[in-house]
Length: 455
Image (cartoon, rainbow, N blue to C red; front, top):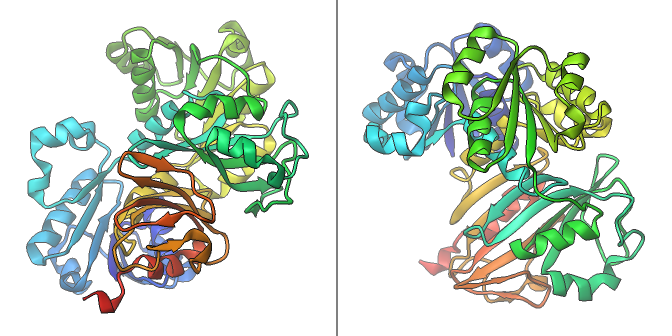
């Protein structure tokens, strides 16, 4: 597959590296020659120094041969123009643009502006995605990640195993009855930064980060077994009144949550006051211990830090945690911080790049892929439709030649959602949720593809 990426910033660089690792043919257009040099030094792909909104540069890049066009520069106008030009110069099957302006990226606004007439197949807004992800996590106290699949009928949840967990030290093979009762399947355990796909003899240990799939009505009971006992979130303090902070505050207001938002820029505070109805807007720094104490940080149900400065987010979250906040969520734009942040006491880390990449990657995957989510930059969750002549159908799950560290987590068949075991048979047109480490993706793609004899 030929992929052209416009922009070698955080998102563009990450996507290029990931797609090259998966043996995709990638070319990147970037006007900053320093970023071009970094790309060619660290990623084995072609790169052109120039503007992605220049028709001559697009022609030089061979846009007429591209199967996918992804525009992820820092300029909304450049991204939209580049995708439009790609459509005018050549029939590129898939065109994706990262757009931050709400007037373009808000789903309702897209309908008003008829943005699809510009030929753009997918609009990505990492900030809105990050705000939605944080809001989603706040619905289940104790969760570090929440994803929904199969028409929102199954939840994929990450949670830390606490000292209050009632299942500590019990082998998984002895929990089969509880597994059936709760409709749960444990996909993985992260222990000391190592990924474990649990087997029958494995046990849970305090401090483990466990990821599981379950029916939504079972989640609260499962969280109690893991030691997370608490009510709903009613009071939240937000550090940062930028795009993410304001979207999150608005959404929390609609949910009836009491919000305090800290912003250091007085002019931005004025914007927040005009756009928020009930939130308390505070001009200051969330790294100011006196301010946090004065605003009763210990009485907050959660502290969320979403400024544009990763280091500030980490420091303010650690301070809030030390001053008594029970639950801290931190935004980290640098992927390298993701595995480190939770080891120093912060409960949840959100990475917009991984969220944006997941939204883009399902267009790259072969087979009838419905959605893709990236987990800790190591694992993908892939929701697919089982095609009639793929390797998945008419076989027991235990008989399918799965690559290592790959699982079928859930199956949707009509109105029924199945948490499968080895005896479960996947039928044509079932929707299947797959868990796979990134090294297994090419083999998974082969399983998903329709065999030639079908034609």
